[in-house]
Amino acid sequence: MEIYLIRHPPPTNIDGLCYGRLDVSVDQTTIAAAADSIATQIPNDTLKTAPIFCSPLSRCLALARRLAAPNEPLIADDLIEMNFGQWQGLRWDAIPRDQIDAWATEVWDYRPGGGESAQMVAMRWQRWLDAVRPRGEKAVIAVTHAGVIRTALARSGYEMGAPAVESHIPFGSVYRLDIE
Image (cartoon, rainbow, N blue to C red; front, side):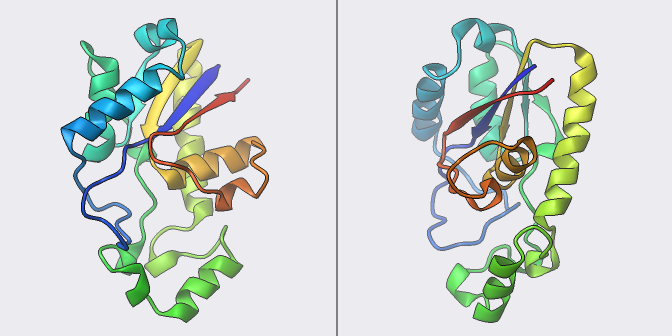
């Protein structure tokens, strides 16, 4: 099965903010531009026939709706962004440096702000994958977040030149995984 992982477009007014699961907005022009760019990166027949799953947050749902039209995407709670606990809504520069350093030292197991660890996000990813696999689809599309994509790539052994769990995932980027 081919899985196309798509990161949502850039939200508005989030510079320097740890927004995690906050439901931040994306303007419609940015959504349209991202959809156009993504359409050039995924085969047309896949876009027309593959089920499109998405995080329940509006920045993913809006893009998924545009890609799935005239159909509706399938909302999957397991595709939601990492929970940053008490850090959510804070500016990154307001988070104590020792906490940021602790996270950088133990990326996989540290729970930023008391929220979720990357390991916990990976467990949600696996749960979603285990639910989708039996559908027998040739391809599926998932519009999600950087945290979910990083853990999915790390779990699949995707090579990025750096550990996938620490890699930069650009807004609107598309990653293809081939899952048996």
